Length: 404
Image (cartoon, rainbow, N blue to C red; front, side, top):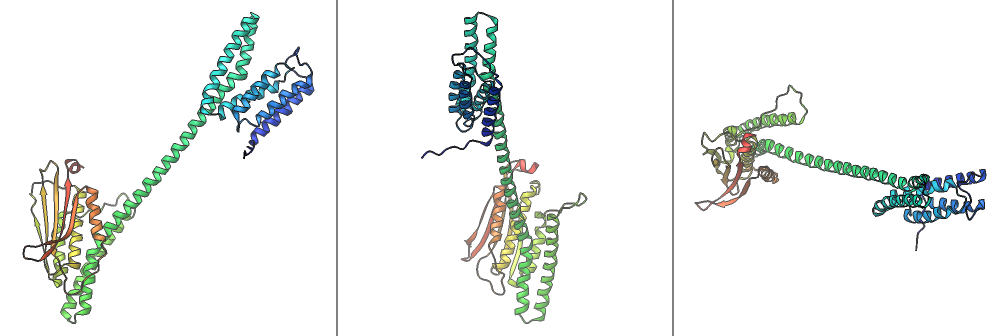
């Protein structure tokens, strides 16, 4: 079933205006030619009416409107003619280029140019008078100029649509980048919050449970002392994180990121927190003194890996040694690796423990992945038949990163 295409409102206005304007000229007796085969004045109204109806199809069926309009224009030359009929044909020609297919928009200007040249040469050869050039000029104004105008307007519209599409795509890409940046920043904040606070809160949870379950004043006093120290340090780190999140003024100095030089303090704090659980933490640094400074992202990632590993040992490790090992491979000015390894006794532990969520291991893997390194965490057999829990990370260090 064919569906009728409703004419555009502007096309209806053009058709009605053209028809009324042509009727007005006809009523005033204004014609553009005489001595034609069909000299009766009323006959000129037929091409006028048909051309006005073609104005209704200028958008929905521009090809049909142009073909019928061309036939009507030729027919109008055998009548006394009407100026409005010619003007409406020019608009139909313009619309055929503007609203037609891309192929039609390319062919019509070339065709009208050839027709204009052919008409000019033909009438010059026929009349052999310079005035015949005026016929070619009129033909160009009626056919070629509307077609060229349609090409210009169509190109401008195409360029404007391409610009709008590019703007929408740019806005969409910007929104995607913003969303990804927000997600990445939230993940970074989650890692920092977990790594900074989990160690202190785990110690608070373990020692508060011990203070409540063991009826010994000295044990309770020591537990409360550890709880207070970890609470104060955790609160200080929380304040530092909040300060980083807030918008500081120009005079606010950026907070210093923790470095591997602070591992001694971290190990000592773990010894204090894990003493009641039989943990003995030690640090083994096999790096050469002249190996050069590490990039800040690498130092921060290594520190957080050690911090999270010690927190997990405090929560889950069986009584025994907890060893932190640092190493460096490669030449100082070439690509090398910083190795971080933390081992603890794998097994059940007596006394109170703190629950774990697994977010720490996820955070460590994310940090290592951002630097292009590798990390392995799991239980390995030890030489004496026991098992140890080992976390080993290898963080790449490049010359380019060190300069940055």
